[in-house]
Length: 410
Image 1 (cartoon, rainbow, N blue to C red):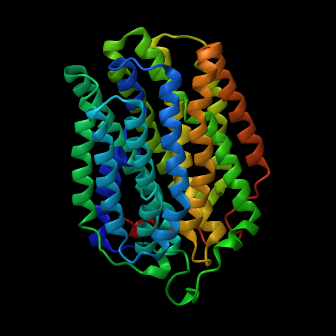
Image 2 (cartoon, helix red, strand yellow; image 1 turned 45 degrees about the vertical axis):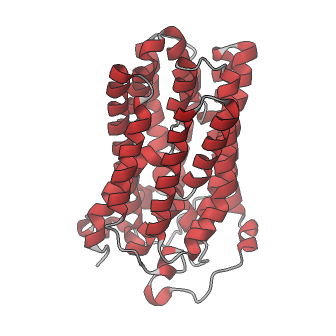
């Protein structure tokens, strides 16, 4: 059996409900602080940067912890509860130090989600079925983000930006319920990338050996440049919408997120269908090329419909990226026993770019305006594409495609 069927639906719903929890408040924090408490853009950027730095500092240790943990489900539940409590604490005070501290805690706790879900998936999935299952994970994740954004837009229109805090709490409870239905114990060797069944290696390689994996380092560098360009774009769009119409800022930001999330679903599904046949690199490069185009297009108009329309492009790039990255990391680390730690390490490196993105963009906006910030981010995105061109294809030439497993997958 390629997948343990009792865990199939809970894993689907875990990805669906955890989608709104794993990223914390995201761009809604910027809207809340700007529209309700009238914070300056550079202060908002500072808080989001510190939150991102806390997340990236925890990523590699979190991945190593997931590799070692026998009960990955418990780690997910603890992370969901901690992220939610930290974000709800923002409502207690708009003080800069307090908001910064709570978001740093949320950022650190959120680092558990990606490696834990990937490890659980790998531990429950046969090797040749992982491509389709990780793409299914991403599809449910994006569907959850889209539904949550729709709810956030409607609830915020009625009750204001504070409604997104309570929506996040409700999604967290649902994600915990889904996690509790997933088997607490899975194949530990398989889940950390030591191999499947009789092919499993006896012991993981030393962590320092990952530093000699040049393709893995190059992948991390290209992803860092991508996120340095990408992370600030949606918050900047949200700020522009808030300045033009504060009362509709949160619903309009939700519209941007919804537009992208529902495009991400077919993009992720396409990865599941084609990544084993076409390879990983061509798909990821196509997703990367969307970003510089998007940055330039944002400068053409401040019209609400235009901004939301351009945000559709984010769905293509992000949908591909989320589904391809775990596949490439597994390609480069299979047999080492360090899959989750490696995924955490790569996330740490590109998290540096994401954490610095909002601070850099905030400074450029403060001194040169929004259009200059978008163009600067587009230039960085072009560098990410160039770096990715140097990366060789990660899928082994002799690897069997997963198409034959599709009929057995849920």
